[in-house]
Amino acid sequence: MAEISEDNKKGNMVEPKAKVVSDKVALVQEVEKMKATQLELFHKKTHQDMINAAYKAADKLGIAPWVLIRAAGWGHFTDDRGALYKGDHIADIDTLTEEQKEALMGVFGMMSGWEKMKKVK
Image (cartoon, rainbow, N blue to C red; front, top):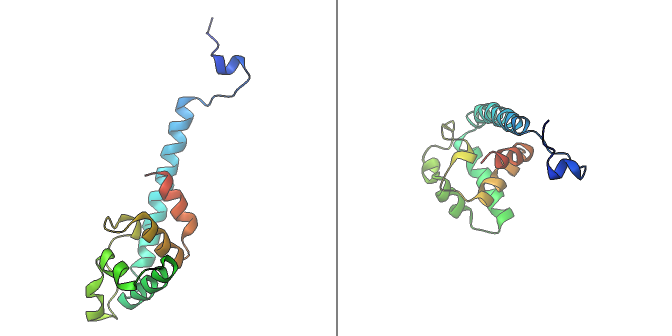
């Protein structure tokens, strides 16, 4: 006969480990798909669009815009403001802090996606 755990004796529901792993895998897959879609959107933005977003995000953070632009590695974007952005997804720019990434994602209206991305890190 199967042994009953203390949690089950007390009436606490315990999720099976396989379900938790399955949910995590599903979330990772959802985030990967979402990031791919978002990256396509970022790649339709110009360097000037990214600079403008950095200015708005920096304002929300109370920092100088160039701090954020340099941290993102976008300092050269002023050389060709009309060029399309070909860089990484904001979430994948290692030189940005989590707070800076969150502010930029907010400027682009991608906060619900950001919350999911934080769960899979």
